Length: 279
Image (cartoon, rainbow, N blue to C red; front, side, top):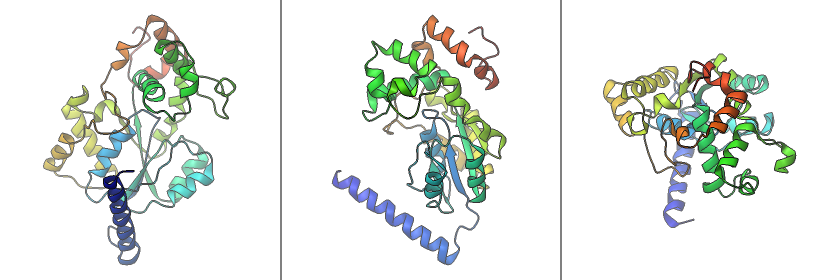
C-alpha cells in the first residue's frame, strides 16, 4: 500500500470515528438515515455509491459486503453502519434478510441494469480485470469470450466450478434481488442514473437523483442536483470498464440471443427493457 493510500485510509477512519461519536453522544444528524445500497453484481452499485456519497450529510460507511453468506454475517456488517452513512453491497432478497434490515431501521435502494449489459460487464470483470474473482479459473479454461459469455448467461453448476456456490443463470442471478422492489425499497435503473456521458438522458438522470434524495428525506436544490449530476460519471473506479448503455450489442451473437431469450427473455420484458422477444 502506498503512502498516499495509507494516509487516505487513516483519514477516512478518523472521519467515521469522529462522526460516530458526534451522532452517539451529541445527537447530530438525527434525521439522516442508514442506507443499504444493493443490486446484482455489475448492475451499477458503484454508480449508486457515487450518488449517495455526494448527498449532503451522507458518508460511505467503508463497510464492505458482497453476497452475505448467512444472516449472522449480514447482521455483523449492518451493525457497523451509523446514521448518515450507507453500505454498498450485493444483498439478495430473503424474508429473513428483509426483516433484519427493517428492524435495524435501514432505508433500502435497489439498482437494476439491463441484464444483457450486466452479463457482458461480468464477463470482462471476472475474466480480464479481477484476478481474484471466484469465476476466473473456470472462465479462463474456456476457449474464448464467446463461450465465457454463454456460460454466464446459462449459469454454471457448483460442481463444475468446484465451489460451494453455483453461478446462477442470468435470469436467476438478477431475479434473487428483485423482491426488494416490493418491500419499501427505492428502485432505480442504471440507465436512468448514468446520464449523457454513459449514453443516458440528462433529464432522467436528474429525476433519478431527486428520487433517491426524496426517498432518504434529503432536500436538494436544483443547483445541487445539477452539480451532483455533472460529477456523477467517473472513470476512476477500479471496477469501471465502459459504463455505456447497450454495449451488449457489440458482444451478443445470434446464439447468445437465443440462449438469453430462453433463460431470461421474459425478465427483460418484465423489467421494461424489451416489449417482446423480437430483438
